[in-house]
Length: 478
Ligand code: ADP
Ligand code: GLC
Image 1: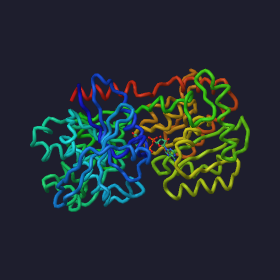
Image 2: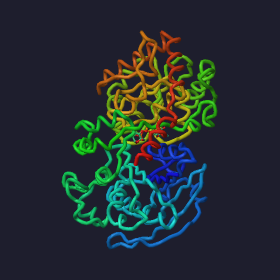
Image 3: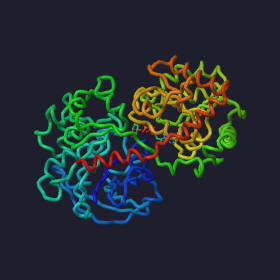
Image 4: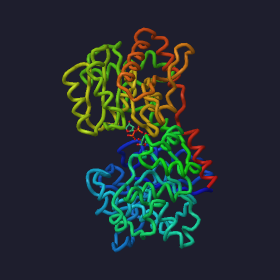
């Protein structure tokens, strides 16, 4: 039996700001229970979902030394859908309306969390063979494991994996502050260890000290070895390329299932979508005040509104796109310039553009189930889950060929009758627009071809089946 501990800063259904939470929430359930005991440890945020917060059971508490600080560490537990979840409690660090926000606070918060997560293990009686760390918030764990923790027999043989979900976020701050909040000696702050360009860098620490490094698609694993995608760590990624692999994300096919999804108006499947899916479009047009017209080509967007996702291309083309026979439904929050851009176009083109500038799980599912196409022209995309959700619901992705988008959406080829979506190569607004127009042409003029695209999209399998096996192999290899 292999014991694996996931350490992460967010996890569905407790707390979510992005795809990381989906992955940490769904992957642990996908391992064979006879071979793996996978548990998850998370911060107990004040802003986590109330219904779960009230169910947590107190396990123990202790005081932990972190440099000159003495901090309270509470440990709570919840068994949910067969998985053991542990929560680290400390109201000083984990209160506030959002899990993250202020980088100075965050670097101290996650130094505390990383050390507390390891320190709690002997007390809860779980001795993992592998600690699987996710993103910069847990980058210190491989470092701590090789530092003080290494001395005791409990931790001596523990291996660690660092999974990069997004190289853009690294947890960077000045060395003195990081030394202060982590308690790590000067030894660690050289360019071959935690230092990068004069600052301390948590993710770099994780990448240098982990026994294996993974990222969430094969293409992104290659891309980050180049300066354009490497976020100044491409040299390190090249240096670590022996230990670096890409394992594409899956999604939970039970949670995202057009046949049973409690959020969608009309259930359907790969056989019935031709008749039934349209009912969701009608309902959504009505709910959002769009022109009620079955035949309108409806494009969905569900996303964090950031530069990463290619919104400057969309902003540039919005006016021109709206001259065409289509509808655009947006759900997202993020940078103010993009929030206001969509509000503006919803005002300018009423009945055509719907801007929903908030977070809503329910509406996101309705968009995946109602639209004809889903637009995701990302500048970079480590994996992307939204396009997988779209495929699952027979909503055809239009994507830029980068990272996980390139690995999961196969471009339509009208001569061979293959493909599950539409894609373009260059980060260029007109190239995106031409691809949208091409999709629109197939939708309006070649309905049978469009429906076959949906057949193939819904037949593609991006459940965790294959990728969980790859993680299992990696766990065995370590
Ligand atoms: P990232 O993690 O970079 O934000 P992903 O595509 O991996 O991108 O995952 C995004 C996840 O967040 C998806 O589950 C998507 O449905 C969800 N999401 C993004 N914005 C919203 C929103 N405003 N309301 C509901 N869900 C959202
Ligand atoms: C990050 C990436 C996204 C990926 C997600 C889960 O947020 O931006 O591409 O799907 O992590 O791995």
